[in-house]
Length: 406
Image (cartoon, rainbow, N blue to C red; front, side, top):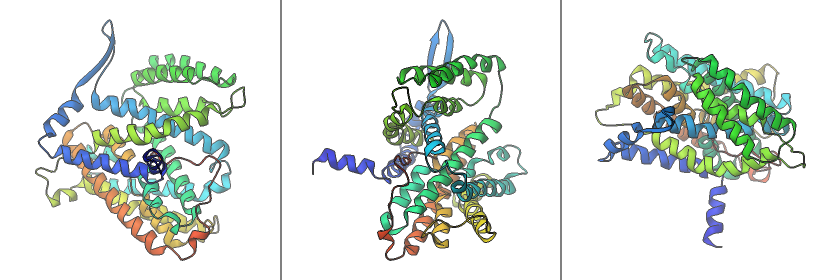
């Protein structure tokens, strides 16, 4: 087999995105604690400006990454959400009830645990949403390492849970992380929205008009004070499933973006945001309210929320476990849901401006996500039953959701 085919197979593996993400985070950790640390932090705060006659955008590089590149990430999330709602796992309400309620529990309980530890501090209290998120790339990547030892229905359950978790995170960002609102820019944002609506209505098949309208919408939403990444999700929902020639612009864009998001954009975000400075930290620092609230929310809160709500739903007779899925499997998935990483770091960046607080956020996210990954993998490995291989890995749909995010 040629090297190119070997690399292609490697990058197509479900675990590949999670592995690349982990390597990017590890590299950030190494650089942030080496002689390159000063340069690493200096580059991230360097301003990049796009100006016309003195007017335009001027932001530190870290914000171009978090507001700009991550808008592309959220565009892909939006494409996946729309596809799943129209023709995938979110099409039938009955299939969504159990993972949907588990996702709600997995967001509420971690937030409550965080608040219990940080409620008395008005500064850190604002980070309550940090442990509520799940990173799909990491979680599905860990599950993929188990291969056919777990039933295929378990992957569908995790994907649906994580997709709905992402939808919840998007709503949280929209509702709770808009600091200053400029209504005039929101009125102007109706113009590219009208353009997107028209393109959808006529079944436009070219990608460039959608991208152009999306970029204009991004700038106006950014100027309005609403978090600009939401423009990516909104744009995605206007991309038609079928154009006037019967082809799918949505599928084409999703397929084209997936490798770039999974292997370039998200790793760049991880490298820019995961650099915990360990100098001066002690083991006791992990038990400060901010990092402890995040770590406990991810490890304990996700387990209690996801597993507890699933158990209540099944015991009450409102839902049934998927085929071949056991309670040990559900508990393992509840642990994997505690891998917050990308979305947790992203919400942390929206919550705090102080570098000291962000260092504590990174510490809590990395520790909580790492413990959750190890626990989830170990539990699922121990619960793998002989003979599962015969029924695993049946595709969930003709166009399975790529494991690229949170």
